[in-house]
Length: 298
Image 1 (cartoon, rainbow, N blue to C red):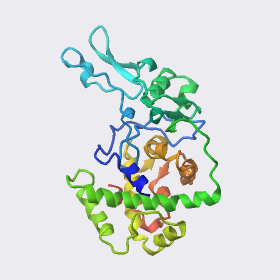
Image 2 (cartoon, rainbow, N blue to C red):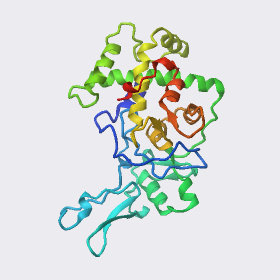
Image 3 (spheres, rainbow, N blue to C red):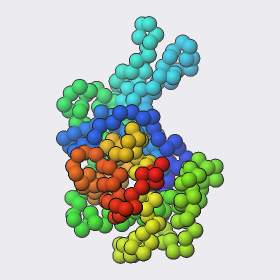
Image 4 (cartoon, rainbow, N blue to C red):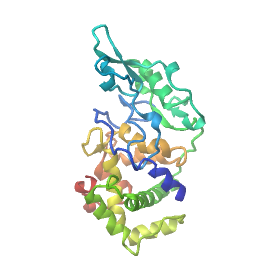
């Protein structure tokens, strides 16, 4: 558990959201793919990976080269035409920085390991307009490996751990938020009630039975953490629904360690409309319908 808390907090000092862009619906992992992958590393409950930042060519004099302030999505870089007008073009994968080690590798849903996210997105950009490019997306962080099928009993265990992680992450953010840049004042007030509650289950390695009993006994402590995570993911755009792209920052680092991640999020889409609504998200984590509150995700 301690490793997971550190793992999930590595982005606590970073911006909570990336620039908003239009995003497609939650897609099937193999047959469908969003127009653009959301940057992994954009909220506290995910891995910090700087290589997922949008590829932007930096120049020193904005007056001479407008690319200094021109942003391109991942996989593209800025160039100027003959009239000095900036435009985004696909980055040549060979221009990506060499990977410093296997920890920079990422796995695509084509079951191919890419040296880094830069190499992946540059390759994806080169395939724009093709069927292969439309289907290709980043599956998870790390080299491709065999992911065991998620059994029914394992699927029921996943939200037990996930709820506990979210609660502990919020408590840790609250403890470290000296500069008031990790949580809003309203969020801090809500977490404070959890933090000061003597009945709170402390972070640690707990049995599934204990996690289940604590959820039943201290149910109210888990309502806000579940809503909070939904709000952290619902950014592109903020519309009360999660797409496959919006889930990517959370699922990509989880998959190598939690093999039920993909199936869990797929089954959260109860009506199979390829969007996960707040009500569906809450239900996946055992939050009662009457306790779903859109104000808690703000």
